[in-house]
Amino acid sequence: MKTILKTDLTVADIKEGFVYNEYEGKGLFGWGGKLTIQPEYQRNYIYADGKRDVAVIESLLKGYPLGLLYFVKTGKDTYEILDGQQRVTSFGRFITNKFTIKDDNGMEQYFDGLAKNLQDKILDSQLTIYICEGEESEIKEWFKTINIVGVPLNNQELLNSIYSGPFVTKAREEFSNSHNAYIQKWSAYIKGDVNRQEYLATALNWVGRGNVEKYMSAHRFDNNIDELKKYFNSVIDWVSSVFIDVKPEMRGLEWGRLYETYHKNSYNPAEVSKKLNDLYSDYYVTDLKGVCEYILGGCKDTKLLNIRIFDDDIKRKVYNKQTQEAKDKNVSNCPLCALGNDNNKDRIWQLKEMDADHVTAWSKGGSTDIDNCQMLCQTHNRAKGNR
Ligand SMILES: [Zn+2]
Image (cartoon, rainbow, N blue to C red; front, side, top):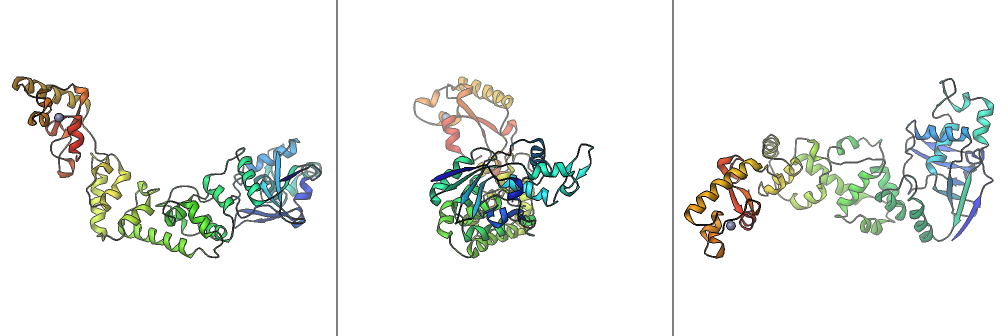
């Protein structure tokens, strides 16, 4: 791979022909059309927050360097920004009057409203640019390395760069577009930031059955995202028809896995809703994230609910009572050991060697008070399992 250091370009050169797409949230072109500011695989413009974009302009006005920019040579006289697109988009948007900064008197000023000497200071700022040329694979490897500095790319952003192509472009239009009217509905079930590709990551994770990379690699040159969309919508439609309630804990559940496991079962949404709300108001249920799967699985796996356990005070009282009675009868203080016929049948376990057990399981209506508590040796408690 070849790298050239270029220091003769200024902000004025790069902002020539600057195009910003407000709808997609992307700076598109600059340097008289020779430079693609935001190639497909790059993240959306995330500096537009009135802080980071303003900071870029303030740096220029103070004469601070913008930091290294990395361009890739893609043709005879064409380039793409590999690193620095947020900074370039910031000054491009400022110069085209898309946002304001505060002047010395605290007044908001667009570029056009700045004094001529300040405008010139920005335009004449020199840039330090590395231009690299090489095989796609070398450049991608290098891209991984340089992105360790600054705001690092997350995993999906990195995958978008590695598997860039028509598929990623279309997939981003659908799943990384904060103007998509469905985002609101999807956000009931999906966690994360649309702009940071987290909805796309979820959609790919579902259709790829957990293997995003394999799916992206296989579909990289597809000209449509039909399967991805269809599968994603099947999952969302299924969840929203089975669960008529929307609870905060539903956000970010593994809906793809749940869909695969349970979508062939039939559920009565009204009954599901009643069960769900009962469990939500049940004092003993401490893990609300497990409620949906518990219901989908037929209300059997109570481990998913992390049922509230007995406190130390109850355990000690039950232990003392059980142990005293066991010593009187010369049997083990674990009632199940006492029934057995091995060396443990008269063994007195210490408190720390025992666990509390619900005599009547919670799932069968047993409560977590002292009358429903027994202490078992750990082996027997584990074997009993069902709370
Ligand atoms: Zn035992």
